[in-house]
Length: 321
Image (cartoon, rainbow, N blue to C red):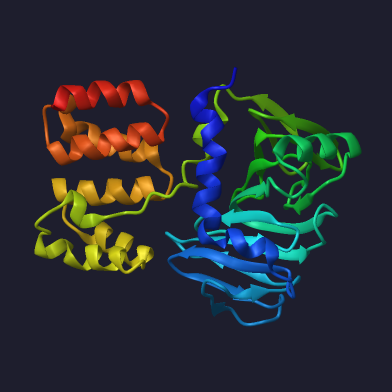
């Protein structure tokens, strides 16, 4: 039997991405993709020679367009084939070709981190869609990276391209094939594969793939929830974060003198950016097992839950009561 938390996880991700855009299925698509969610600073350009420009929710893009996210920023796209795509900070993606539903689209992930999911009601539900994909071996999405091509037959997965072009795909549901000129591997749920230059892809089994996408959450930083009143030296950071200019907020925090308030704001941002382990490490000394700073204890409990360490969170919060 599936873990109830794992069965709820895809629904949480979908709600984070599509929100009120559920009605888009009835819209006649005149373009290949639409920006449905963004945080921070995100740029697009129409082709490789075009100029980068800022983007906003609702903007529509055509094949050939590039999308990039700045530090502390994220963006979500809904493709015409109903695939949902979300880019984490400091990522660059090209929409190479978008087909009609189920006919296969092609994207290029040049760097960064991407999570995607096939819309579950494309056919008649998740099980019917997965069965159709596996039987026909049709690739709903193909993604090119500097070191591999990833053929998607699954429904829920993440792809990361590092600074040296190394590519890692993690599958949560369904199946993915990662291949290059030296070989290929099939990657199933709770499995991961990595490709580096000059080597065939290799596969590994994960005990819990769920912790790989902590950055795809509905969590939002809230500086004054954790630090109140806000010390004057931290006001520039707090205001920038509240305005959604997360890169500026992080820069201001880097400039700030070490303090418990600074640690809380840093941890809040780390949790927002999917770095739950960093947040936990920063908060543990302040929380002192529940006997220390009550706000650090509360935020640490939240970070432990995001990291899937619910038993630890329960113990911590019980000690802090």
